[in-house]
Image (cartoon, rainbow, N blue to C red):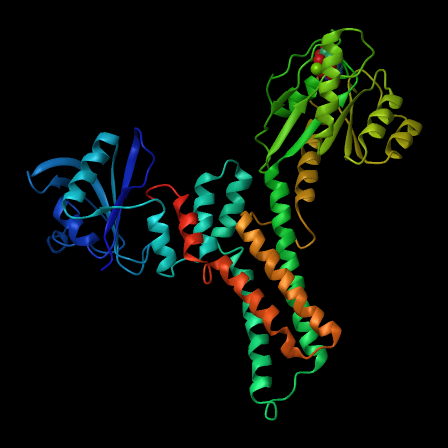
Length: 465
Ligand SMILES: Nc1nc2c(ncn2[C@@H]2O[C@H](COP(=O)(O)OP(=O)(O)O)[C@@H](O)[C@H]2O)c(=O)[nH]1
Ligand SMILES: [Mg+2]
């Protein structure tokens, strides 16, 4: 008999509400012993029973002493239309650990067990409510540290991985069935035309490669993008930094060499994880602190995914820009032609020289003082980050190491199957490779995942999830 389990599903501490979850065959019965519906909306017929998918207001009482413990809202989800697929009850009580603990004690005294980490999600998986990749997405959703991460986790939760994996697995299995039919009834079935089987495997290989690269792009997107501001001292880097951040973070001064340390901040205007980095500017100096600062600038530039080079339009130094680009190799560069409120926009020959340089993406004219051009700069940065994160198919997936591994193994197996066709061996020689692809795809959605792996996946969940 399946145990009925309960846990506090909300984080410990004080808050508006806390939620206690109870799941299992005795969930309704147990809650009915500690819950007394009250209020004008309670019809006599509903006083004794909890109706599915309805919120009931009332009191939690200790059935042993008749003590009132809290005013609560109770929602009942009848199996199988619940998160776990079992009868589930959620009690929303006041958000206070003292209260939740008392309610939990009352439930435990009714013979309910304490749920282990991830036990609700594990039950949802075991009852076929969600596949393993969706179960893992539940954990990713609660752990997401940025909007970008949350968006990617939601995509997985909505079947972004299991959908394509199941479709590919169906193709693999259809091909296996076809080959086995040919082997079993060589005379009756129509032999598979060579080009047909060939296309079939190629399609599978391509689909798996797309998924693997979608995972690689997910890594890049989550790893974040370092946008480094560079340029000569006093060009206005710190002013541009402040404008982009919409606040005065960096010290701006007309005294050259003010910024000596690297300043980092995460702007909120991007759904992707962006780190904006302000650096010390370039100039010839003998100050030890400044030489150190320039060393740090060089280090920061090495980590840059995009450089925003701030050019002082009053005294533009295109040679210095050429030097920076030369030492920095392939990192894309946007030139912000600053101080156009007091200086000229680039002339034709300047523009020609700058845009002719390798890795220059765009020149944007503006002023960090008046704010002109800052919106364009922001949009250009976003466009760069978004474009850089997407592969041609536009797919981006956040995959765990385990999922990536399984996908790669499936792809390699499918590739081996394709080689069989290329060598001109009989289709039956594809069988072991296709079976292996089938197995690895199955492990992603939890069909063929060994129990110890399942155990370690769910043990990383928090209690109440
Ligand atoms: N007129 C004008 N002055 C600016 C502009 N941007 C920066 N400044 C001034 O240039 C000086 C150096 O700016 P700062 O941001 O500290 O330059 P950094 O050394 O590159 O970080 C300060 O006095 C700023 O007020 C601009 O677009 N127009
Ligand atoms: Mg500065």
